[in-house]
Length: 296
Image: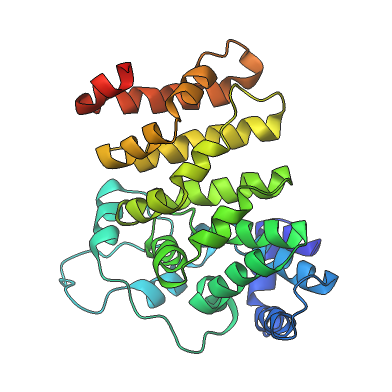
């Protein structure tokens, strides 16, 4: 667990170690099957996988990435197909959102397991069943890492979490836990998920009222809570952008007074949350059909 947080070279060595990732996944599967999601070894295994999933999209070798994600049809010989990991061009992002995702392997090995639907479902199961804060946080954090990029892998993971594995109820429950780091990581994961246009209505329907309910009445007085508040505002920004329906959900949940109060904080120390709230307010005002509702 310590070695897995040693930096890019350490992560690379561990990802390439034959049988290591498979063994970690096997152990966690056994713990869940035996109804023992709270033991220390399971926590360690999940924390290792969480660390190994960090920067995964960027750090995988280009040749490996292309062999997994290069589309097998509708590609002209004259096209220069970009590697799907590490690409940041806007056109490529749009193309990847529209391109059918390749089928995942039925029996993944090694590093392939890190973004496979089997492990995604394991994380969601641990989020739901474990009462150990570090295990919950690491499971949420692994999903946050896997949904942080712009290529097909993060998009596929997000779709699996929201639509295929019905993971939103488990994530929503983590918004209401008392442990601040677990709550912060759950919000950060939702922020990543909300970037996907095709998923945002599902996310808004399931968790938008909960996000509003955990917004403070003013800027909180500690760094973790302040960062969580900023992430909530940016998630709400993603969900309400170009959607009057989702904006009405925010209004009906009485979110507007909270956002206004947060935006009016004058302290530089907590400006991150205030800035995020101001960005959200600016975006909400773009829904001209709702101006009269705002004024009321």
